[in-house]
Amino acid sequence: MTTTDPDLTTLDFQVTKNLAAKSPAEREQLLADPGFGSVFTDHMVDVCWSEKGGWHRPRVQPYGPISLDPAAAVLHYAQEVFEGMKAYRHADGSVHTFRPEQNARRFNRSAKRLSMPELPEGVFIQALRELIAVDEAWVPSGEDQTLYLRPFMFAKEAFLGVRPAKKYGFYVIGSPAGAYFTGGVKPVSIWLSETYARASEGGTGSAKTGGNYASSLLPQSEAYDKDCDQVVFLDAHGNVEELGGMNIVFVKKDGTLVTPASDTILDGVTRNSLLQLAEDRGHSIERRPISLNEWREGIASGDIVEVFACGTAAVVTPIGTLKAAGFTDEQPIGSLALSLREELTDIQYGRREDRHNWLYELS
Ligand SMILES: Cc1ncc(COP(=O)(O)O)c(C=O)c1O
Image (cartoon, rainbow, N blue to C red; front, side, top):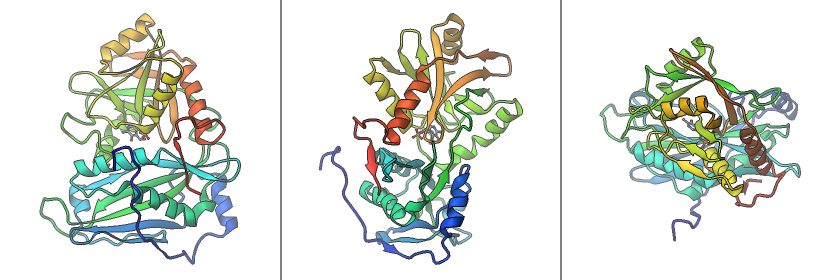
């Protein structure tokens, strides 16, 4: 097998239907205005890993609480990784997800960094299919609506010693999500965190692990206190990293797109896809460190004409204001971010040709 061949490993899932599943009427009511992250489908995927048995006991079962020993390692040492992706309902009723192998690979990179077992890519993707097979009706069909998919894995072993656990659970849950922006995409204001760092060189910044998000909550609260929507982090050298949950891209006057290249940030699937679409249109792409000074000077001189954030949840968000303790810089609003957003979402919802074969049909 070469590294580009898809991994075809699968497991034999046992499916237990939820006898208390929501009625079609209850489900439709919830899907009318699902918001984000608080409504869940009727089932979940649950697979165990142990040192002796490897991945075993693959199940789809009714959505519900997970029973944990109070000494479970995740509760003490935060051995946990997750992913975030979406299922899209197309006009013909079919359901697709977007570049799932990228999420599967990132999941394994995160797992490796957290000393956790890797999950075969084939099983990661199979788990999404297994969930959709029973909860397909939960994929909404309204404009900009999706079923948000959350694969995650954590250390279940009851042991208080500090070492990699010997037992893990892998789960997938689904949560219908409404349009991120109601009434159209709006530019966001961002707060520059000068007190707190998100990650450090050699740390876990490029892994999707809960601890990174826990440590971003205080700076995010500071952003809210300063009337900003999001927080942006710098590295130890004054280079821009990313927002609490999104990557950042700068558009220059000559059409070049610049984005931070660093081991301390999450390598976003949305960002890579948008940059590919921009490259297809003839834009040059630079992945390199970009300092706060270069950003501010670029705005002042007119060399930077647009700044946007991107990630699975909001897709693309123009940045309208950068605020810090000592300054407020208004950012120019251009048209590239929104036009790339439209092209990407058209592909995701099956309204435009998927020339890179990014879509994966789940049902
Ligand atoms: C910290 C962080 N950066 C960037 C992203 C964007 O990654 P993706 O485009 O794969 O969703 C996310 C997740 O959405 C994130 O949590």
